[in-house]
Length: 97
Image (tube, rainbow, N blue to C red; front, top):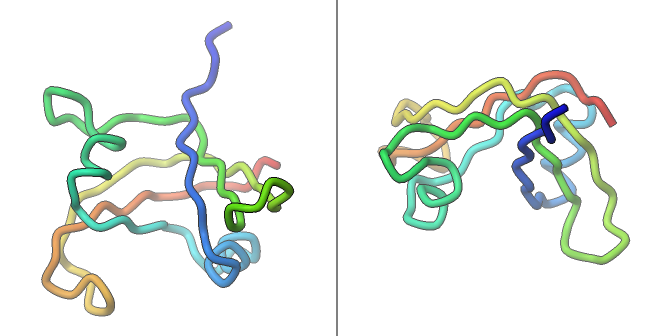
């Protein structure tokens, strides 16, 4: 049996809670070198994960949740804090843990 491919992301409490409640179904990351290296392979293809593990802050005992990974899109269509910038949209499924 293969090991699941997991993307680990840290969030502020506000966003962690929104995902936990089901209000937020995507997580966003600005299209910068750091995220390109984590979300794309050497050939420029988006990486497919099985799950996203969210951590609420950086403390050792921070709350975590595991969510199904549905895919990644690259877009510019957002109108709030990523206005006119290229960014990654990580699409989320059901919370599994």
